[in-house]
Length: 415
Ligand SMILES: *Cc1c(COP(=O)(O)O)cnc(C)c1O
Image (tube, rainbow, N blue to C red; front, side, top):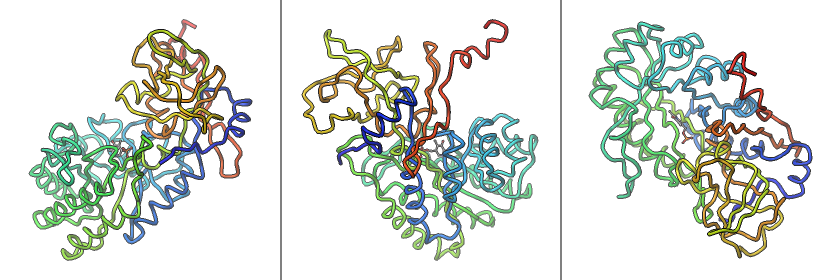
C-alpha cells in the first residue's frame, strides 16, 4: 500500500513558516476515525472499552480527544496517572497496568479509584499493605512458552518479565477473594505490533478458556477480560493494515463459542491499544540540512534519535516521503541521519529515495505512537514540539519544544 502523508506540501510549507522543524504532528481526523472504527468493531459486546495506552502518546490534548470518543486510559506510572487525572479521567476510566510498581503509585491509583491490574502474585500483599485491596481487581496472565499463530512464532512469553503463571492465577484469585475483592478481570499481552487479524482472536481464546476455568475453580465473578495492546500497524509499504472489523468478528466468534455457553455472556471486553490508535496518525517532520558524500551517500536532517528512537533502538523501518517529490523516481540510495554522536542515529539506511536537496521537507511516517514519548536528551538534544492538525485544517501547538532552560532546570543553582 502506498504511504501518503496526511498533510500536503502546501499545508506543510505553511505550517513550517510558523512552527520550525523538527516537530511531531498528529491528525485529529484520523485519531477519531480509528477510535470510532474500533468501538464499532466491538459494539456487539456491551461494556466494551478501549483504555488508550498513555505511554504511546502522553499528551493531554490527545487524551481529551480520545476521551470524547469514549476511551479510558491505561497508565503504568505516577506521571501517567497524574496526567490522566488532570484530563478528567476518574475511577473506572483508568486502568493501571504497571509492573515492579512503587508503593506511591499504587496509592495514587487507589485514591483515583483506578482499576488495578496486578502483574505478580507477590503484589497482593504489597498492595494490601500500601493501599488496601479494592473491590475490583485484575490479574495479568503469562502462559509461558512460545506464542504462535498458524505455526509462526509471534513471541516468547516464557522469556517475558510480565504476568503470573497459570497456577499463580488460581491462587491469586482465591486470595483476593478472601481479602474482599468482588469483581475480577483477566489480562494478557503476548505479542507486540502484530500485523495479522488472528492475534486478538487467538489471545481471546486463551483468556476466555482461562476465565471459565478460574470461575469454576474459585467461584469469583469475572467482570472483564482485557486484551491489552499488541494490534500493530504496517510500518513498511508492502504490508496490509489490520482489519479491525475482522478482528472484532474473530473475537466475537470465540466469545460465543467459549464464554456464552459457560453462562459468562456478561463479560466485558477491554483493550489497551496504543500503537494501533495513534501510530499512523502521527508524522515526524524534519528538514534536510546537509548532504555528505563519502563511502555512502548521507542526508543529514535537523532531528535525531532523541526525537524518534525506534530506528536506533530496534532497527525499525519508518517510511519517508520527500515532500513535493512524491512522484519522482527513487534514483538515490541514502542513509538519512541525525546529529547524535552515535552511528545508529539513522532514520533510514540504504533507502531508495528521490534526489534530496537541502531545504527539502521529509515526512517520517507512523511516529504517532512510541515516537515523541520515547524521546530522551542524549547529547543534550532537546525534545521537539508536538502539533495537532485539527479536523478543520487548522494547526495547534499542543506541546512546545524544549529549551535549554528546560534541559538545565534540574541542575539547581548552576545555570
Ligand atoms: C505498551 C503497553 C500497551 C500498548 O501497547 P501497543 O503495542 O502500543 O498497543 C498496552 N498495555 C500494556 C500493559 C503495555 O505495556
